[in-house]
Amino acid sequence: MNTYAPALMTDQYELTMVSAALQDGTADRQCVFEVFARRLSSGRRYGVVAGPGRLVELIGNFRFGPAEIDFLRGAGIVDETTARWLADYRFTGDIDGYAEGELFFPGSPILTVSGTFAECVVLETLILSVLNHDSAIASAAARMVTAARGRPIIEMGSRRTHEDSAIAAARAAYLAGFASTSNLAAGARYGIPTTGTSAHAFTLLHDDEPAAFASQVAALGKNTTLLVDTYDIGQGIRNAIAVAGPDLRAVRIDSGDLSVLAQHSRELLDSLGATETKIVVSGDMDEYAIATLAAEPVDMYGAGTAVVTGSGAPTAGLVYKLVEVEGRPVVKRSENKATVGGRKTAVRRHKPTGTATEEIIVSQGVPDHAANDRLLQRSFVAGGEVVELPTLQESREHLRQGLISIPWEGLKLSAGDPAIPVTIVPTS
Image 1 (cartoon, rainbow, N blue to C red):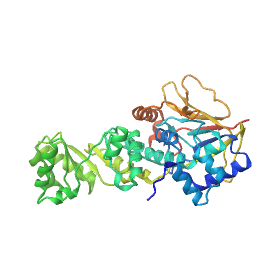
Image 2: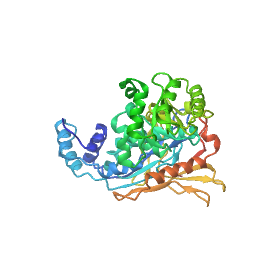
Image 3: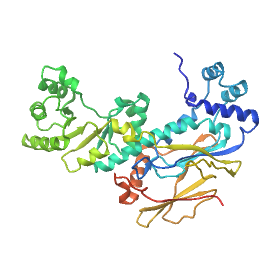
Protein backbone atom coordinates (compact mmCIF):
# COMPACT_ATOMS: atom_id res chain seq x y z
CA MET A 1 0.00 0.00 0.00
CA ASN A 2 1.33 3.45 -0.90
CA THR A 3 1.76 6.00 1.88
CA TYR A 4 1.39 9.63 0.80
CA ALA A 5 2.53 12.83 2.48
CA PRO A 6 0.12 15.23 4.25
CA ALA A 7 0.08 17.41 1.12
CA LEU A 8 -2.60 15.13 -0.30
CA MET A 9 -4.94 16.55 2.33
CA THR A 10 -5.51 19.03 -0.51
CA ASP A 11 -8.92 18.71 -2.15
CA GLN A 12 -9.03 18.24 -5.89
CA TYR A 13 -10.95 21.44 -6.48
CA GLU A 14 -8.07 23.40 -4.95
CA LEU A 15 -5.68 21.93 -7.52
CA THR A 16 -8.23 22.70 -10.23
CA MET A 17 -8.08 26.37 -9.22
CA VAL A 18 -4.29 26.31 -9.05
CA SER A 19 -4.02 24.78 -12.52
CA ALA A 20 -6.41 27.33 -14.04
CA ALA A 21 -4.75 30.26 -12.26
CA LEU A 22 -1.30 29.16 -13.43
CA GLN A 23 -2.61 29.01 -16.97
CA ASP A 24 -4.35 32.41 -16.96
CA GLY A 25 -1.61 34.26 -15.04
CA THR A 26 -3.52 35.02 -11.83
CA ALA A 27 -1.76 32.45 -9.61
CA ASP A 28 0.78 35.00 -8.34
CA ARG A 29 -1.68 37.72 -7.41
CA GLN A 30 -1.21 38.74 -3.76
CA CYS A 31 -4.23 37.65 -1.76
CA VAL A 32 -5.58 37.50 1.76
CA PHE A 33 -7.71 34.59 3.00
CA GLU A 34 -9.46 34.55 6.35
CA VAL A 35 -10.83 31.83 8.59
CA PHE A 36 -13.97 32.70 10.57
CA ALA A 37 -17.27 31.28 11.78
CA ARG A 38 -20.51 32.75 10.49
CA ARG A 39 -22.22 31.56 13.65
CA LEU A 40 -21.41 29.60 16.79
CA SER A 41 -22.45 25.98 17.17
CA SER A 42 -26.05 25.61 18.31
CA GLY A 43 -26.51 26.57 21.93
CA ARG A 44 -22.96 27.85 22.40
CA ARG A 45 -22.04 31.30 23.67
CA TYR A 46 -18.36 31.21 22.69
CA GLY A 47 -15.87 29.14 20.72
CA VAL A 48 -12.28 28.25 21.58
CA VAL A 49 -9.46 28.54 19.05
CA ALA A 50 -7.43 25.33 19.03
CA GLY A 51 -5.03 23.84 16.51
CA PRO A 52 -2.68 26.66 15.41
CA GLY A 53 0.20 24.97 17.21
CA ARG A 54 -0.36 21.79 15.19
CA LEU A 55 -1.21 23.65 12.00
CA VAL A 56 1.94 25.71 11.60
CA GLU A 57 4.08 22.59 11.92
CA LEU A 58 2.02 20.83 9.24
CA ILE A 59 2.28 23.83 6.92
CA GLY A 60 6.04 23.98 7.44
CA ASN A 61 6.25 20.37 6.25
CA PHE A 62 3.65 20.71 3.50
CA ARG A 63 5.39 19.22 0.45
CA PHE A 64 4.44 17.36 -2.72
CA GLY A 65 7.02 14.61 -3.14
CA PRO A 66 7.58 12.26 -6.11
CA ALA A 67 4.92 9.79 -4.96
CA GLU A 68 2.29 12.52 -4.67
CA ILE A 69 3.23 14.06 -8.03
CA ASP A 70 3.17 10.67 -9.77
CA PHE A 71 -0.28 9.95 -8.35
CA LEU A 72 -1.67 13.32 -9.46
CA ARG A 73 -0.17 12.96 -12.94
CA GLY A 74 -1.32 9.37 -13.33
CA ALA A 75 -4.87 10.20 -12.27
CA GLY A 76 -5.01 13.09 -14.74
CA ILE A 77 -5.63 15.59 -11.94
CA VAL A 78 -2.83 18.01 -12.87
CA ASP A 79 -1.00 18.95 -16.03
CA GLU A 80 2.79 19.22 -16.33
CA THR A 81 2.87 22.93 -15.47
CA THR A 82 0.96 22.34 -12.26
CA ALA A 83 3.03 19.26 -11.44
CA ARG A 84 6.24 21.30 -11.66
CA TRP A 85 4.73 24.04 -9.50
CA LEU A 86 3.68 21.53 -6.86
CA ALA A 87 7.10 19.88 -6.85
CA ASP A 88 8.64 23.24 -5.88
CA TYR A 89 5.90 24.22 -3.41
CA ARG A 90 6.92 25.95 -0.22
CA PHE A 91 4.64 28.36 1.63
CA THR A 92 6.40 31.74 1.60
CA GLY A 93 3.62 33.98 2.89
CA ASP A 94 2.42 35.20 6.27
CA ILE A 95 -0.06 33.70 8.72
CA ASP A 96 -1.54 35.71 11.58
CA GLY A 97 -4.38 34.87 13.88
CA TYR A 98 -5.94 34.52 17.29
CA ALA A 99 -3.67 32.86 19.81
CA GLU A 100 -4.34 29.25 20.61
CA GLY A 101 -6.72 29.22 23.56
CA GLU A 102 -8.35 32.50 22.53
CA LEU A 103 -12.14 32.77 22.58
CA PHE A 104 -13.88 33.50 19.29
CA PHE A 105 -17.31 34.70 18.23
CA PRO A 106 -19.25 35.04 14.96
CA GLY A 107 -17.10 36.90 12.45
CA SER A 108 -13.88 36.75 14.48
CA PRO A 109 -10.92 36.67 12.02
CA ILE A 110 -9.40 33.58 13.63
CA LEU A 111 -6.68 33.10 11.00
CA THR A 112 -5.38 35.34 8.21
CA VAL A 113 -3.30 33.79 5.44
CA SER A 114 -1.46 36.15 3.09
CA GLY A 115 0.55 35.29 -0.01
CA THR A 116 0.01 34.42 -3.64
CA PHE A 117 -3.37 33.01 -4.58
CA ALA A 118 -1.96 29.62 -5.48
CA GLU A 119 0.17 29.10 -2.37
CA CYS A 120 -2.71 30.13 -0.09
CA VAL A 121 -5.61 28.32 -1.74
CA VAL A 122 -3.81 24.98 -1.78
CA LEU A 123 -3.79 25.05 2.05
CA GLU A 124 -7.53 25.48 2.49
CA THR A 125 -8.48 21.89 3.31
CA LEU A 126 -5.55 21.35 5.67
CA ILE A 127 -6.27 24.57 7.56
CA LEU A 128 -9.98 23.91 7.93
CA SER A 129 -9.48 20.26 8.83
CA VAL A 130 -7.17 21.08 11.73
CA LEU A 131 -8.95 24.17 13.05
CA ASN A 132 -12.50 22.83 12.70
CA HIS A 133 -11.66 19.61 14.51
CA ASP A 134 -9.49 20.97 17.30
CA SER A 135 -11.65 24.03 17.94
CA ALA A 136 -14.78 21.88 18.15
CA ILE A 137 -13.14 19.63 20.73
CA ALA A 138 -11.72 22.50 22.78
CA SER A 139 -15.02 24.41 22.71
CA ALA A 140 -16.90 21.39 24.08
CA ALA A 141 -14.18 20.52 26.58
CA ALA A 142 -14.10 24.07 27.96
CA ARG A 143 -17.81 23.82 28.75
CA MET A 144 -17.20 20.54 30.55
CA VAL A 145 -14.40 22.10 32.59
CA THR A 146 -16.70 24.95 33.59
CA ALA A 147 -19.43 22.47 34.57
CA ALA A 148 -16.92 20.47 36.65
CA ARG A 149 -16.27 23.48 38.91
CA GLY A 150 -12.64 22.71 39.56
CA ARG A 151 -12.91 18.93 39.72
CA PRO A 152 -10.44 17.21 37.36
CA ILE A 153 -11.59 15.58 34.13
CA ILE A 154 -9.77 12.74 32.37
CA GLU A 155 -9.96 12.58 28.55
CA MET A 156 -10.87 8.97 27.70
CA GLY A 157 -12.22 9.15 24.14
CA SER A 158 -9.56 7.44 22.02
CA ARG A 159 -11.74 4.41 21.28
CA ARG A 160 -14.50 6.60 19.90
CA THR A 161 -12.67 8.33 17.08
CA HIS A 162 -9.97 7.91 14.42
CA GLU A 163 -6.53 7.05 15.77
CA ASP A 164 -4.95 10.33 14.64
CA SER A 165 -7.97 12.37 15.71
CA ALA A 166 -7.69 10.80 19.15
CA ILE A 167 -4.26 12.36 19.68
CA ALA A 168 -5.40 15.77 18.45
CA ALA A 169 -8.54 15.53 20.60
CA ALA A 170 -6.51 14.76 23.71
CA ARG A 171 -4.36 17.82 23.02
CA ALA A 172 -7.40 20.07 22.48
CA ALA A 173 -9.10 18.79 25.64
CA TYR A 174 -5.97 19.41 27.68
CA LEU A 175 -5.73 22.91 26.23
CA ALA A 176 -9.31 23.46 27.42
CA GLY A 177 -8.43 22.48 31.00
CA PHE A 178 -8.75 18.69 31.22
CA ALA A 179 -6.34 17.32 33.80
CA SER A 180 -5.04 14.30 31.90
CA THR A 181 -5.61 11.81 29.09
CA SER A 182 -5.59 8.04 28.76
CA ASN A 183 -3.96 8.39 25.31
CA LEU A 184 -0.28 7.54 25.66
CA ALA A 185 0.62 8.88 22.20
CA ALA A 186 -0.70 12.30 23.22
CA GLY A 187 1.29 12.06 26.42
CA ALA A 188 4.48 11.25 24.54
CA ARG A 189 3.99 13.86 21.82
CA TYR A 190 2.68 16.80 23.82
CA GLY A 191 3.73 16.13 27.42
CA ILE A 192 0.14 15.76 28.61
CA PRO A 193 -0.22 13.92 31.94
CA THR A 194 -1.56 10.40 31.40
CA THR A 195 -3.68 8.23 33.62
CA GLY A 196 -5.84 5.14 33.37
CA THR A 197 -7.29 2.16 35.15
CA SER A 198 -8.43 -1.33 34.23
CA ALA A 199 -11.57 -2.26 32.32
CA HIS A 200 -14.30 -4.74 33.19
CA ALA A 201 -12.47 -7.34 31.11
CA PHE A 202 -9.68 -7.47 33.70
CA THR A 203 -12.14 -8.25 36.48
CA LEU A 204 -13.92 -10.86 34.37
CA LEU A 205 -10.58 -12.50 33.56
CA HIS A 206 -10.07 -13.49 37.19
CA ASP A 207 -11.93 -16.10 39.22
CA ASP A 208 -13.49 -13.42 41.37
CA GLU A 209 -13.40 -9.66 41.98
CA PRO A 210 -11.04 -9.74 45.01
CA ALA A 211 -8.51 -11.68 42.94
CA ALA A 212 -8.64 -9.04 40.19
CA PHE A 213 -8.24 -6.19 42.67
CA ALA A 214 -5.37 -7.96 44.43
CA SER A 215 -3.58 -8.42 41.13
CA GLN A 216 -3.93 -4.75 40.18
CA VAL A 217 -2.79 -3.51 43.58
CA ALA A 218 0.16 -5.93 43.56
CA ALA A 219 1.26 -4.54 40.21
CA LEU A 220 0.51 -0.84 40.70
CA GLY A 221 0.32 -0.27 44.43
CA LYS A 222 -2.45 1.45 46.36
CA ASN A 223 -2.09 4.63 44.30
CA THR A 224 -4.39 3.15 41.67
CA THR A 225 -8.10 3.26 40.79
CA LEU A 226 -10.21 0.11 41.08
CA LEU A 227 -13.28 -0.32 38.86
CA VAL A 228 -16.02 -1.43 41.26
CA ASP A 229 -19.19 -1.80 39.15
CA THR A 230 -18.57 -5.05 37.26
CA TYR A 231 -21.01 -6.93 39.51
CA ASP A 232 -22.47 -5.20 42.59
CA ILE A 233 -21.07 -1.75 43.38
CA GLY A 234 -21.53 -1.98 47.13
CA GLN A 235 -19.76 -5.32 47.32
CA GLY A 236 -17.18 -4.06 44.85
CA ILE A 237 -16.27 -1.21 47.18
CA ARG A 238 -16.06 -3.56 50.15
CA ASN A 239 -13.79 -5.87 48.16
CA ALA A 240 -11.62 -2.96 47.05
CA ILE A 241 -11.04 -1.68 50.57
CA ALA A 242 -10.57 -5.20 51.95
CA VAL A 243 -7.82 -5.80 49.39
CA ALA A 244 -6.13 -2.40 49.23
CA GLY A 245 -6.93 -0.97 52.64
CA PRO A 246 -8.48 2.41 53.50
CA ASP A 247 -5.69 4.35 51.79
CA LEU A 248 -6.69 3.18 48.29
CA ARG A 249 -6.39 6.15 45.94
CA ALA A 250 -9.74 5.86 44.12
CA VAL A 251 -12.65 3.77 42.91
CA ARG A 252 -14.36 4.23 39.56
CA ILE A 253 -18.05 3.88 38.72
CA ASP A 254 -18.88 3.55 35.04
CA SER A 255 -22.64 2.85 34.95
CA GLY A 256 -25.99 3.35 36.65
CA ASP A 257 -27.58 6.36 38.30
CA LEU A 258 -24.35 8.16 39.08
CA SER A 259 -25.95 10.74 41.34
CA VAL A 260 -27.39 8.13 43.69
CA LEU A 261 -24.42 5.80 43.39
CA ALA A 262 -21.92 8.56 44.21
CA GLN A 263 -23.79 9.38 47.43
CA HIS A 264 -24.06 5.75 48.51
CA SER A 265 -20.43 5.07 47.56
CA ARG A 266 -19.17 8.00 49.61
CA GLU A 267 -21.15 6.88 52.64
CA LEU A 268 -19.90 3.31 52.28
CA LEU A 269 -16.26 4.34 51.79
CA ASP A 270 -16.43 6.60 54.85
CA SER A 271 -17.96 3.81 56.92
CA LEU A 272 -15.05 1.57 55.93
CA GLY A 273 -12.54 4.17 57.04
CA ALA A 274 -11.58 5.11 53.46
CA THR A 275 -12.40 8.77 53.93
CA GLU A 276 -9.65 9.91 51.53
CA THR A 277 -10.45 7.42 48.75
CA LYS A 278 -11.66 9.39 45.73
CA ILE A 279 -14.69 8.62 43.57
CA VAL A 280 -14.22 8.76 39.79
CA VAL A 281 -17.30 8.58 37.55
CA SER A 282 -17.37 7.90 33.82
CA GLY A 283 -19.83 6.73 31.20
CA ASP A 284 -21.44 9.12 28.67
CA MET A 285 -20.19 12.22 30.44
CA ASP A 286 -20.91 15.53 28.69
CA GLU A 287 -21.20 19.04 30.12
CA TYR A 288 -24.82 18.51 31.12
CA ALA A 289 -24.19 15.19 32.87
CA ILE A 290 -21.24 16.74 34.69
CA ALA A 291 -23.34 19.71 35.76
CA THR A 292 -26.03 17.47 37.25
CA LEU A 293 -23.39 15.92 39.52
CA ALA A 294 -22.11 19.25 40.83
CA ALA A 295 -23.64 18.74 44.28
CA GLU A 296 -22.66 15.08 44.56
CA PRO A 297 -19.52 13.67 46.25
CA VAL A 298 -17.70 13.10 42.96
CA ASP A 299 -13.97 13.84 42.89
CA MET A 300 -13.12 13.29 39.23
CA TYR A 301 -14.83 12.71 35.88
CA GLY A 302 -13.88 10.64 32.87
CA ALA A 303 -15.21 11.96 29.53
CA GLY A 304 -14.95 10.02 26.29
CA THR A 305 -17.40 10.03 23.40
CA ALA A 306 -18.83 13.49 24.06
CA VAL A 307 -15.50 15.28 24.13
CA VAL A 308 -13.98 13.67 21.01
CA THR A 309 -17.18 14.40 19.04
CA GLY A 310 -17.49 18.00 20.20
CA SER A 311 -20.46 17.16 22.43
CA GLY A 312 -22.90 17.31 19.55
CA ALA A 313 -20.95 19.85 17.48
CA PRO A 314 -18.15 17.85 15.77
CA THR A 315 -17.06 20.84 13.69
CA ALA A 316 -16.60 24.47 14.68
CA GLY A 317 -18.23 25.61 11.44
CA LEU A 318 -15.17 27.56 10.30
CA VAL A 319 -14.81 28.71 6.68
CA TYR A 320 -11.82 29.93 4.64
CA LYS A 321 -12.65 32.85 2.37
CA LEU A 322 -10.77 35.14 0.01
CA VAL A 323 -11.22 38.72 1.26
CA GLU A 324 -8.55 40.74 -0.56
CA VAL A 325 -6.77 40.66 -3.95
CA GLU A 326 -3.81 42.96 -4.61
CA GLY A 327 -4.93 45.22 -1.75
CA ARG A 328 -8.52 45.42 -3.04
CA PRO A 329 -11.35 44.10 -0.85
CA VAL A 330 -13.43 41.35 -2.46
CA VAL A 331 -16.75 40.04 -1.18
CA LYS A 332 -19.05 37.08 -1.66
CA ARG A 333 -22.70 38.12 -1.99
CA SER A 334 -24.42 34.72 -1.89
CA GLU A 335 -27.61 34.70 0.19
CA ASN A 336 -26.89 33.83 3.85
CA LYS A 337 -23.19 33.45 2.99
CA ALA A 338 -22.14 37.03 2.29
CA THR A 339 -18.68 38.09 3.45
CA VAL A 340 -17.10 41.37 4.49
CA GLY A 341 -14.19 42.27 2.24
CA GLY A 342 -10.71 43.33 3.27
CA ARG A 343 -8.17 42.10 5.78
CA LYS A 344 -9.57 42.36 9.32
CA THR A 345 -7.99 43.47 12.57
CA ALA A 346 -9.71 42.77 15.87
CA VAL A 347 -9.61 44.17 19.38
CA ARG A 348 -11.41 43.00 22.52
CA ARG A 349 -12.52 45.72 24.87
CA HIS A 350 -12.57 45.29 28.64
CA LYS A 351 -13.71 47.13 31.73
CA PRO A 352 -10.97 48.28 34.11
CA THR A 353 -11.90 45.21 36.19
CA GLY A 354 -10.87 42.96 33.28
CA THR A 355 -14.36 41.89 32.17
CA ALA A 356 -14.66 41.70 28.38
CA THR A 357 -17.42 43.91 26.98
CA GLU A 358 -17.14 43.86 23.19
CA GLU A 359 -15.13 42.68 20.20
CA ILE A 360 -14.49 45.23 17.46
CA ILE A 361 -13.41 44.04 14.01
CA VAL A 362 -12.22 46.56 11.43
CA SER A 363 -11.61 45.93 7.74
CA GLN A 364 -8.42 47.37 6.29
CA GLY A 365 -7.48 49.28 9.38
CA VAL A 366 -6.74 49.02 13.09
CA PRO A 367 -9.48 49.59 15.67
CA ASP A 368 -9.03 52.37 18.17
CA HIS A 369 -7.98 50.79 21.43
CA ALA A 370 -7.41 51.97 24.97
CA ALA A 371 -5.35 50.70 27.88
CA ASN A 372 -7.84 48.01 28.84
CA ASP A 373 -8.27 46.74 25.27
CA ARG A 374 -6.37 43.88 23.70
CA LEU A 375 -5.42 43.39 20.06
CA LEU A 376 -6.23 39.78 19.24
CA GLN A 377 -4.06 38.76 16.30
CA ARG A 378 -0.47 37.63 16.53
CA SER A 379 2.06 36.37 14.00
CA PHE A 380 2.40 32.61 13.44
CA VAL A 381 4.37 32.54 10.17
CA ALA A 382 6.33 35.43 8.63
CA GLY A 383 7.79 35.12 5.14
CA GLY A 384 7.29 31.37 5.28
CA GLU A 385 9.19 31.02 8.56
CA VAL A 386 7.46 29.89 11.75
CA VAL A 387 7.53 32.44 14.55
CA GLU A 388 8.14 31.11 18.05
CA LEU A 389 4.75 30.10 19.45
CA PRO A 390 3.46 29.80 23.02
CA THR A 391 3.75 26.41 24.68
CA LEU A 392 0.69 24.24 25.21
CA GLN A 393 0.83 25.12 28.92
CA GLU A 394 0.90 28.84 28.11
CA SER A 395 -2.05 28.45 25.73
CA ARG A 396 -3.93 26.52 28.41
CA GLU A 397 -3.44 29.41 30.83
CA HIS A 398 -4.44 31.90 28.11
CA LEU A 399 -7.80 30.15 27.77
CA ARG A 400 -8.29 29.97 31.53
CA GLN A 401 -7.81 33.72 31.77
CA GLY A 402 -10.08 34.29 28.78
CA LEU A 403 -12.93 32.37 30.39
CA ILE A 404 -12.48 34.40 33.57
CA SER A 405 -12.78 37.61 31.53
CA ILE A 406 -16.19 37.01 29.94
CA PRO A 407 -19.40 37.94 31.79
CA TRP A 408 -20.74 35.09 33.92
CA GLU A 409 -23.80 34.75 31.67
CA GLY A 410 -21.45 33.70 28.89
CA LEU A 411 -20.49 30.57 30.83
CA LYS A 412 -24.05 29.25 31.05
CA LEU A 413 -24.71 25.90 29.40
CA SER A 414 -28.13 27.03 28.20
CA ALA A 415 -28.56 28.49 24.72
CA GLY A 416 -28.13 32.23 24.44
CA ASP A 417 -26.46 35.09 22.66
CA PRO A 418 -22.66 35.20 22.28
CA ALA A 419 -20.91 35.99 25.55
CA ILE A 420 -19.93 39.42 24.23
CA PRO A 421 -21.28 41.40 21.26
CA VAL A 422 -19.25 41.67 18.07
CA THR A 423 -19.18 44.74 15.82
CA ILE A 424 -17.71 44.46 12.32
CA VAL A 425 -16.76 47.76 10.72
CA PRO A 426 -16.47 47.31 6.91
CA THR A 427 -13.94 49.17 4.80
CA SER A 428 -15.09 52.64 3.78
